[in-house]
Length: 271
Image 1 (cartoon, rainbow, N blue to C red):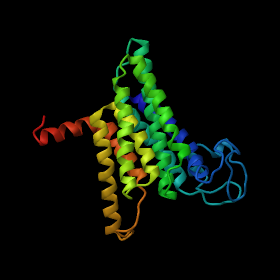
Image 2: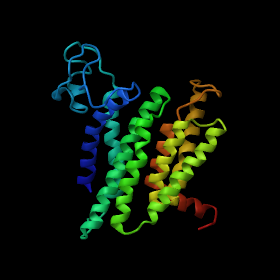
Image 3: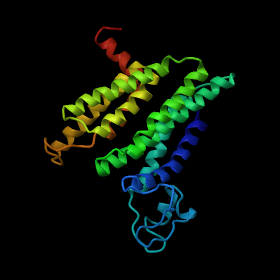
């Protein structure tokens, strides 16, 4: 269990370094492949020794080696946040016994990869939405194809296509519901597209996870909105980015959707 979580955390730190590049370049319409990372102040290329997640920022004392330009704290925060997100994504898999059937074992590995992917895009989309009030299609739309491919492979290897069918319904239902809100003027189109991706992943896990995940997103978004109004950082007419709360709700659904749904049903006497 510890090996899985530690490996996920280290891998997340490395991916987090790349996500910093994505969060900066995608909204600007730049390539995420080339040119290589460089200091925006002096233009010097960032070498491997200065690009070690967390450690380089600390050793450099948050400044460029060449021009002494300050490196924002956001960079190590994204790296650390991605490491934590990967550990969280791996939690449901950490306690699983390795199956003696290689096909079933492979299915679990692919499913883990799918949810690590969801964790990665959750971090980068939350950062971009908070920065720019946008959810770029370049990141959101591939989520449908990647999710369908990885979850589809998982279902096929397990010989059970029912979760894949629920995933498809979940994607359509979530996107349709948010689409209706968009038509009523209460939601951005980027949120609609993201909701479909979230619905795909949550639906694969089950109806309970899907329902709780979508509801939790609205609950978290409402709480944040009220808190900002109370703190007088927003007025009642202000808009807030909703993507981060959709994603936060999704992870509530992934990690605790089934027990929360069961608890609610017991509370209202339906279970």
